[in-house]
Length: 119
Image (cartoon, rainbow, N blue to C red; front, side, top):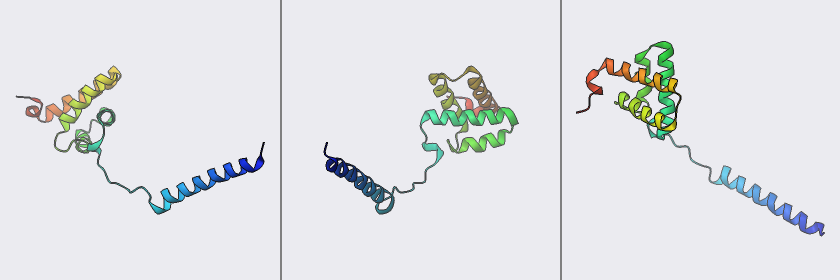
């Protein structure tokens, strides 16, 4: 074995790693992008709606639930819950979770029954 080749190999890896870190962190770091919750994938939206439903189940604060749902579906909180229910069923969420989401849907319909009606 030639120790000089190993030292050169390890030195090349260390120099490459250091150069990559300097380039990625100092010269051209990733930019910070501001995004909103309505840009989430449907499975993450379903998780978010489930969290809102769990909070609503514990507090019965529909006003807070509406404010939270506005984050993922501005102006259409009921539609967000209905879409999340479809996604949650497709992903095999627990029946208890689906039931909580359905209770939130029912509460939203009771606030504005006309919203839940499709022509």
